Structure formats: C-alpha cells, structure tokens
Image (tube, rainbow over all chains, first blue to last red; front, side, top):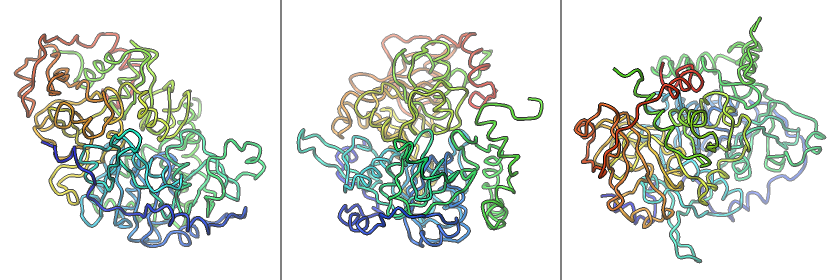
Length: 335
Length: 256
C-alpha cells in the first residue's frame, strides 16, 4: 500500500510558471530602478498591470491583510484565464474563482475559511476540471517564492515527500551532493503580478508592514510586477528615518494606491478586526448561484469604486467599530 | 450522564498531552483551545507557534485564524511563514496538532479530496495548508478528531500529510527527516498511539464508559491494543471551568 508514492521521483501535475532563473534575470534586468512616483488608482493599477492570462500571487493570509480593492477591481474588469498561487488563500481566491477569473491554480489552501467552515462557491468552482490544479503545501509555496526572490530555479526541502501532495504537484526529488540524502526539489515561482496590502508606503513604493509577514517579503521580490495598496501614503522621510522597517523596497514595486480600510472584510493587524457579520453574509450567499450573483451585483458591480464599497458596508461608523474590536476595547456609547 | 460534551472532552485531553517548555505548532480550532487551556491550567511555558509567523503570543482570546492579529498579541516575534517552518525543519519544534477528513492505520491524513479523479474530485477540500509541512518536519504529530468509520478508513483517498506511510522505515525511505512521525490520536472515544514495531495504530486509553468493541465498531480498520489499557481520567472541574469561562466563553469551538 502506498509504495508507489515512497519512491516517486516526480510529481505528475502541470508546472504553471517558468522556474528558469536566467529568464527571470532577463526580465529583472529591464525593470525600472528609478526612484519615481508610482502613485495611481485601483482602476489604473489593474487595467495597466494585470493582463488576461497572467499568473497572480496575493499577499497576506487569505483573510488577513488582503488587497480587497484590487481583487474586487479584477472581478469588475472581468479579467479572464488568470492563474494564481492559492497560498494560504481564502477570500482572495474565492472572489476570483467564483467569478470565473481563474483557469489554473497552484493550491496549498483554498475553499476553507478556517474556523468558519468552507465556501460553497469556491468548492464548486475548484471541483471542476476547467480550473486546472496542482497541489503543494503552504510552505512549499512559501519556499518557492523564496527561491524566486533569491534568483534560483529551485530549492531543496524536506516536506511533501512520500505523499499524494507530492504526486499531484510539479515537484521532483534531488539527491544532496554532500550527504547523498533525498530532498524534495521545489521549483522557483516567479509570478507575473504580486498584489500586497501594507500599512504604510511612500510614493516610490518603499513599504512597511506591521505584524506577521507571512511570505510577503519573498512574494514581492519574486514577482515580475508588484501592485501595492496601502492604508496610508507617508512622507519619504518617514521611510528614511527607519530603514530597518522597509519590508518591501521600492525597486520591486510598479504601482502604489492609497486605500484606507483596504483589507475589509479581512483583519488588518493593529488597525481593524475581521467583519464577521459580513463574512457570514458572504458565506450564506455563496450557498446558491443566485445568492452569489446578488452579492457580486451589490458589492462589486453595483459600486463604482472602493470608497463607495466602504460606504455600503457601513462607512466610518462600521470601521470605527472594527477598530475597537481590533484594540479589544468597547467603542459603543457608554462602554 | 456526563456533564461535558465530546468537543470539551477532546480539548481537555489534548491540553494534558504536551510538556512544559516544549514548542507547539498550533492550528485552527480545537488545537487553539487546547493550547490556551494547557497554558492556563498545566503548562504555562508551552511556546505556541503559528504558521503565518507569530511566535509565543499571550493570547487575549481565541484567534479566528492562525494568521490573525490575536496570534501576535504580546508575542515574542512577528516573523514569516518561511522562518517558523524553517525552525521546524531544523528540528526545533516538538509537537503539532492536526485534523483531517480521513486517517488510516499508519496515521496518514487526507484533507485534500474525496474521489479518484484529482482534476475532478467528488468533493474538494482546502488541501494541505501547513499540515503536510508540519506532519513532515515536526517531531511528534498529534491528531485530534472525532472517531467514526467514515473517517478512520482502510485506505485514504489522498495522502495529504504523511503519517508512517506504508509502515516502519517508509518515512525515512521517502526522504522525510529521521525520527519524526505520528505520536497520538485523540478522539471522543479513546486515545490511540502507535505500535513501535509495525507503526500501526493501537488503542492506549479508553475514555470513561467506552469499550474496546465500541472503539473498533467506529474504526474502518483493525486496531491493535497496548499491553495495558488505561482509562482516561474525565475532564476535571477546573479544566471545564477555565475552558468555558476563560478560553472559549463564546462557544466558538466547544459549541456551548
């Protein structure tokens, strides 16, 4: 039983991206190094930097520090045939797969909403063969981003081995030239576009992030183009005063958009907590096709931009409550 | 009739199993409640690690996500997934708690799919998440799960996370780190462990009022038995009070 898995030297599924380090270098050779203003709008960031067919990687943790404004705009602009790293992905991949934007996905975590259960819309979409799938573990994708960030074509690792997760991946095995031991060889992942929401950035794209970083330092460096949304754009001097706090340097970044409350309904560490009633409303809606369509009609197609969306979910009053929940304080009148 | 529900039983038993000053990788749900309960009642110096990068928080309440801001509340470090998983890969993490849709006699876990066609499964689940990483790299894997014969199966549809694979020596042959592997399975009926010679699952401790026959009826494969079967002490009044009042007052996990 399972003996075929133990000796397997190569996963059998599709490798969606080119791991070749020299091809990546050719791209990065021509990337702009100028310290120039990259501020733009959500609409422009998506229409200029995301093309049909591109492979995306989304920062944060699926429902924590997610670039919601960009995700909604991808849906609104009806981008098609996108690929995605389904790495710790929750609301992000759900939005894209349940609206037909995705046709392939490297999966390490999709469909689930952790403690809240599963999303029916995402489950149904990922069960179809029209969305081509290759499986990995969370850290396999994290290390694949690292290999890209480091300018390599693969990285050896000790996870995945002996399992169907390996069989249904595009990983291989490699023998260590020093010890003779067997390792998994994980191909570098160079996404076409990385999309990350941060706490602070200057107009050039130097970014600061509070709290846990997930794999974002590597995801940003490995991606050919990077779109940043930020809670606030801060003066350049504030970056230079704390250079040790620059998590993503400007040279990775192609577009900066200031989007306050930009991770709603997700948690933004130190800023606002999850909007739990919104997630419940969303997951209840996703149980039927009609519920799904009416959600997108109301919250995505029915609003012009993210400011209108924030007004629709309850505006400043709602966001003040969510900030209180994040700070573990009661902001209601009278305590 | 017992004055605790099956989920409370799972959490209380899981909370007793890890030693103080050990490092524990904590997953969503029951493991979070068990770790918090352990810290409050038995082992205050257990170091909790979360896969998104948080290390040793002083949790102010149950997190919703293993990546939310509660997981880094008063933490020692807010790091990256890469860093905490590399810490596991170099042998610094003692325990992890996992769950799954299916488990077999060698502790192999399925959280990916039901069916035979990978591209078009009968049911698709989230996938590995961090489970494969933890089950590969951490010294002792503890599974916490309700027990029935749809979940405890002869052969899992998909090995998401490695147990002992096909038996003794298989993990090492596959290339997984030496000396790692399944340790215990905590269920609503009993505590299971693994036979050292065959790496097969065995009954080690029966919960109060549960018989060997009842456990076997709820398992889709033949279980071995430890030489001496223990009886699991039921949840104590202190465990239940702290669990209900301090760890999960809103009943997110224990459903009260």
